[in-house]
Image 1 (cartoon, rainbow, N blue to C red):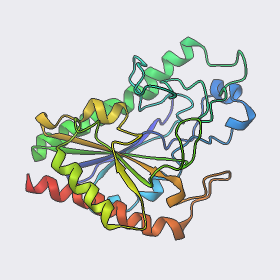
Image 2: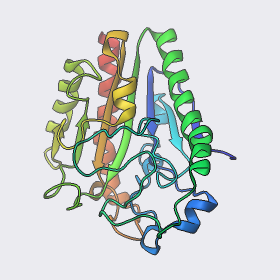
Image 3: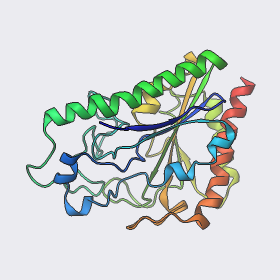
Image 4: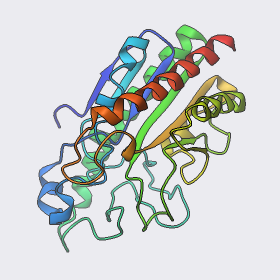
Length: 264
């Protein structure tokens, strides 16, 4: 494999992880995808662009290069399910709409998938782990913000329209409860947007695995409704007019994380 991730080291104790932003495919995955999947509809579109301002705040950023259709970096390596009900695994087999991702008999082989685990999943998690360890060693604590986005209406996965800002802290286990309360309050001040804490999205593997308040590592996932910054259907255009006010809230959330860290 060539480049599998994009990592930029910052100067404050905050790491922003973007595990589902990747667009690259391996030859085996590309050859096997059904026509409806070739536009990569379940991508967390434009997340690195949406969070470009984080560099000004001094945050470290880590973004995937490969699509979640190759391997899902927000799932555990043993592929144990994270949620009851409909969900996708380490090697997704279906689109969010529930239809098969690959043409029959065209899934990558177990040997190819073992390569993806070794050469895509493992470097991402090694980088994440090393950076959190560096931040904790330097500052005494580390903050992890796992940045995601999703189409706001997906009947196969959930009823109705999702809130705009879906904060997840694994029901309070991945970060200090007071931090979650402060982030909720920031969302509540922005009345043009809806929000929820630990609703449909409580945090995936990254939030659950790395968040450890007892060790001063606090992790929060944000699943952002894509209607807040882009066109949700092909060609999935970024909408600067929608994104700009959304970025105001995102900036306040990240500043809120950093301010909380400095107080504690």
